[in-house]
Length: 387
Ligand SMILES: *Cc1c(COP(=O)(O)O)cnc(C)c1O
Image 1 (cartoon, rainbow, N blue to C red):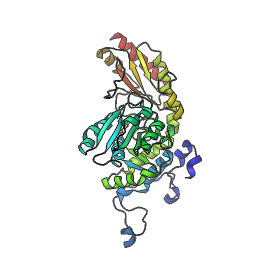
Image 2 (cartoon, rainbow, N blue to C red):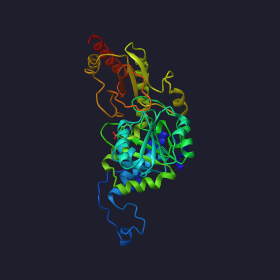
Image 3 (cartoon, protein in one colour):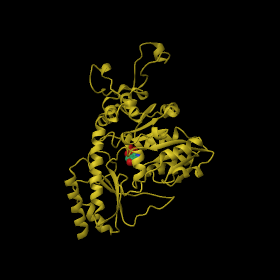
Image 4 (cartoon, rainbow, N blue to C red):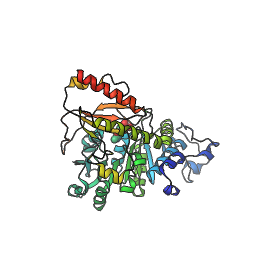
């Protein structure tokens, strides 16, 4: 691929563009279609390679978006699917069959656990959860029928960094695929496939879209897993609309610039919070004091705006006083848009309890002025004190 030497910023701007086919327009327009008319019977029968066959099998809009993500991920094939959660379930289902076993990281995105414990179990696939910090020790958990090792790094809500290359080496030795939810770092800050991941998952709803106005997921596969991924997506009738792919591609063009600002704003807030008497611990791998910092520094090239804060134990009334009244931090799920957010982190652990005596909060640092954001948090702590 000619993009090998290109920097992510350059790829984000140029990848997937089809100006020559669209009268010189910079952006590929939105195609809304079910039917593609074929000029000949042979084309209709797919005997001659028609570039487009049928709406849900791809249009120039979905292709532009998928090519752009594939180039960023260094993937052989990227598919776009309706949500980030669907990207997780699609990636898993494209690999496993009844009777198989998968290893799922204990710090995984909550709904991914729900899928494993519910639908996947019903289909005869067994899940074992593992400690996110297990590294090469995962070898002890691999069974002859283990087909997937699922990673998420840093972990949802608790931000443990995983040793992906060590896990991948062992998994591959035993014939298991390595799947990774790479939404936190995006392909800009972590090149999953280069670190041994076979299928890299993005909730494009987050930073790729970047404007809290679209729900979308992507799965990017290396050469070995590309064909079965594509076949599975077609067999399932999965499709992401041209409108959503257009919005996500528009977001992707500016993602590196936005991420740099989210990273800076997040670290500024994290460092400020570390000094607060109300705070027990800040969970942010880019902080030198974070247990995952060494691995983060070795493998990642940046950090996004999402991190965690463990507060000292307080009453629910005090937590309520802090949260209610924040002006710049919205209380709502999802993240990766331009705006700051805060939510209490509700997570489940079955392998090892996560050490936190007080409430854990997840903060998304948006693109606002950090002085304004800090003043907002400071006023919240004052309300907490008074409650
Ligand atoms: C939000 C999120 C998802 C799911 O994305 P949706 O588009 O909301 O389905 C998956 N993984 C992580 C880490 C997320 O934060």
